[in-house]
Length: 317
Image (cartoon, rainbow, N blue to C red; front, side, top):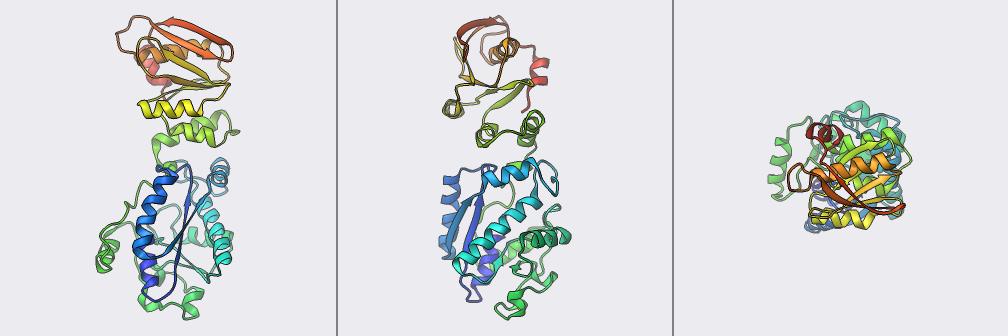
């Protein structure tokens, strides 16, 4: 939708710069996002500016003024943040107005008419946000009233069907474009379950804790902490890179990957975590040996795997 919005305005002979807001809540890394977006902006011949809003968005996630969507997505608060940032950039580069690929009614939480009005008011961008795909269904904006853009060449697309956008893309000979869904982990049920668990026990967490939510299988041990088991070698390496002195390392002695315990784990937590780790070691249900490295020192525990039902009850995802 953003590609189409950009193309529509460029076809009117107006210079456009693209701004994208990335955060750790994106499924893609910053580097891969830059690479993917650069491919499209180069084709459109527009300059690309990318800004990391992880810290600001994290505060919105913890305390959303306008609540959450279907999961833990504070979409309205997030949009307000992004439009505020976009306005700052607009003024910095001397642009006259903003354009957005939003489609009226496409997103049930943040793209309702009332939600759009709230976002514009709170972000102080009322009248200067042009939505080319739905403009004819919305109140005329400053660029339309001033004659900078031709309202007659804008569109009246609404709703969740992608057919009008696909047809428009064909008209503009745009055949390669990113998938419209899956752009935010806050709308993902599995990720939100892990995040909700984190919020339930503490709101005093930062970027590291969010990063860890994207890795491995998570198990709640107690209100003191949890265990993360990597699914593959790449995740194991990422866990080890993020390990802090207060974390506890669980190392299967026969086979299996190193696992990470976070929080202030006590003796019972460590025993339980070792049993969970043992559950992922091949070799049946006999006791397994797990090396534990914590701030207390090192020791080897021989523990039986956790019963499957209890394992499932402890597992967040």
